[in-house]
Image (cartoon, rainbow, N blue to C red; front, side, top):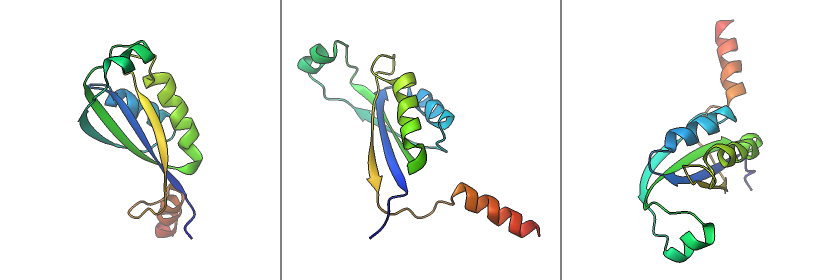
Length: 117
């Protein structure tokens, strides 16, 4: 059984705020992300519940992070791009069972040091 070492953070924000999301995530330890354009389908009841006007044009930011920085990234997103900001973002995370194609930071540093010897 695989041990989860990464989480996928998904952040949905108003159109034009993906840079704010990525800046907040990187400040908390994320390395990068992927931005997708989307369209929200919220209704008037949702606007009344949250007491905000909901824009239909959205951006979804996918951020794969090591498990040890997940909480810091989510907290940073809440502060800088949450519902109380112009980005009106929501963020959540999902466990990731397996990851390929990434080089962990420490392993990359170790490899560079070994190559210099």
